[in-house]
Length: 85
Image: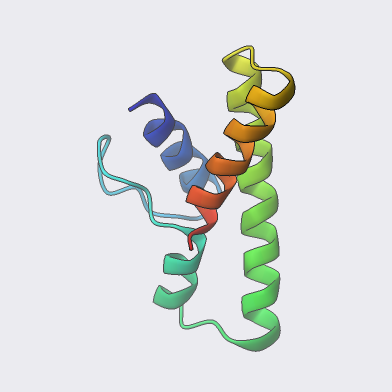
């Protein structure tokens, strides 16, 4: 639940919409689809969204005092979830 809230806050600060405290935040791909982005605009949006997700996930990993393989694994899953499949 804490992760959902952190990702939701990250997306709120990057222009996303948070539906509720317990709702899963929309992924970058979902947001791009809602905005009907294509071409260079899509690429730019996805790159910025992934960068923002990386920063938020790194902060979250630091808050959890993760290091080494645990940090790498957590950050990879966190960014993947935020960006979307």
